[in-house]
Length: 288
Image (cartoon, rainbow, N blue to C red):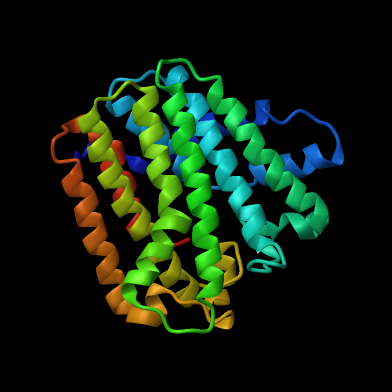
């Protein structure tokens, strides 16, 4: 990685820019709008929209072309967190260091806030400029459907042994699909080539796997204070994770192997891919 590139500064600057644009989408309003804003503006790393911007700029896209895709990705991500935390799903009370939406408001409002964020995401993306917006909308739809399927399979796997292949499929749907969509939407809005789209898809699939593996490791090894969400909940819910299937040490090795695959997918690019290379490294080294 080039010594001149400092990923923490890059991530902080891009997250601040994304936060400003998200705030513009959340004017004061009804209780439902307050709940949407509570979820969408919750403190977070903004890795997924940053990935959209980095992928789009890699292929020559301009920030204003790419921003609607980045915002839409974060809206879908926020929706998924609201719904994952609901009592019928993971039944969690803490997210990003704050009460979850159904605790801060109520269960019905949280459910509607998630639904509304998903609907708003498609409207935001549809307003992006460019000739490939239609395909970008399809990518977001496919990712949202995959996330639902992944959550369903994850719930069905609770309390039973599953194979490593089944576990990887759950992760690729529940977590990986939106990361892949983030990269592909950035590439499409930036008018990338078919080869760019293929390379960035391979990269994002590997990063998504690494991300979820490290999530599993952190859930088993970090504290609630460190994570900003309830630690150890996977074990309490008898969920199948890379840690329960392989153990912590082996899970970390799987994450490193996925990172190597992600970096290999970027081999055809020069210094302009440094943000993506660094994002991959950060995915594996993060502590929350």
